[in-house]
Amino acid sequence: MKANEINLNRFLAQADTQFIIPVYQRNYDWTVTQCKQLFDDILAVSLDDKRNSHFIGSIVYIHDDVYSASGINELSIIDGQQRLPTVTLVYLTILSLAETLENQKLVQRIRETYLINKFADEFSEEEEKLKLKTTENNDSALKHLLRNDAVEDFTEYSRLIENYNYFKSRLLEENIEIILKGLGKLIFVEISLEREKDDPQRIFESLNSTGLELSQSDLIRNYILMGLKHKHQTSIYNNFWKQIESNSIHEETKTNRVSDFIRDFLTMENREIPNKGKVYLEFKKRFPFTDIETLEKILSKVKKYSYYYNKLINPKVENDKQIRNQLRMINKLEINVAYPFLLEVYDDYANNVITKSVFIDILELVQSFAWRRFVISLPTNSLNKIFMRIYEDIEHSDYLVSLQKALVKKRGTQRFPRDKEVISSLKERDMYGIHARNRNYFLERLENFENNEPVLIDGNPDITVEHIFPQNPDAKWKVALGDEQYENNEIPRGRAARYQKKRLG
Image 1: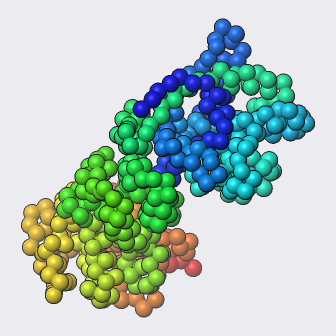
Image 2 (image 1 turned 45 degrees about the horizontal axis):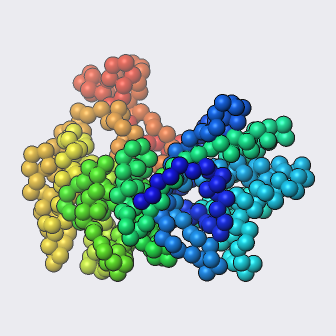
């Protein structure tokens, strides 16, 4: 490892060099807030003649003496993937303004010094000519800006575009020389690693512990890909990890649930639930690898289960209507703790170990188990341990019955509530005041019991909650019901004990 203090302009101006943001790095996520701070710092150091420099942090890269076919030296950035693209955006706005001002000397200087490799072979790929190669989702945005195409013509979303627009709003003909002077004063610590001599992963973990704030899935992705040669990184990412990430997106909220999926996968594998903050460490412990073949075998299994996970969190992906409806109801109840168990059952269904009817019965059984426990107010924390190990009790020759027996045998806070206990609780419980998801689940199951025309409750504007017994009953109700029934149904201050979904119109 070699560390040096270096001027940023000198670093970017290296000839025939490409700074590559590897596929395992997290996305570019600097916002206008960070861009404003950088721009203000550049202005401040430029206007302060007593200051010769301004420190902006470190840039860590792996130097493998790897060269492209056209002789471009490739440096893989493992820390600095936010600063380098941001500084590049500043130079792109300078380039755009210089072209508007028809300052060809400045245009040539900026383009050929900081943005492209001037002497790259004319037959080189377009990407090899760029000084900075970003991750896939930002690559098209960067090329669009470098071509100086109209920003409004770029239809995809990219934070690069958003931040470019910010810098463009602040860069003026009056301050362009000030900004250029300030950029020339920026310095950082350059840390060069050699894969054969240094341990990039360990150094990366150390950087993360000091505030990089990566998610567990980010750390796992880095662990998988960082130690590989560039061609293997691209292959593993495209063939495995990219699909795993895609399958772990919750479509309704557009949130990334890779960390949650890996946690459920590890629970399934180890029969032990890892701490949310230690999923990465548990993954490393469970899946060490030393060669590409072993890694592909590991990721093949993870990828396979990610397809089932995608259906669990996005029921619409499931093609079978009956199974899709059962998954939708499980989602409504938010029985996420059952996912490790359901991943294995889904795999058995996919491999024809069980039939569709058995699979549906199991999905019904999981709902019944969770709902009954809710109705009688059993603690939910015991569900984790139940679903963590319940698959071990299944006999494949008698799949459903063995599962039913295993659940019925549970005792204490882990028990499967019987009908009598549930009915007794329903008579007393305020079902109007429970959480909306449980209330809606309850009403939908009642509405559709033995109903030949199932009614979807959620999102239906023609359905509302109506009280069977009025919140403010008049005297006629007391006459109709009698004293005993009236007193049993009356609830002070307008609370209702019984209610139903009622179709309007």
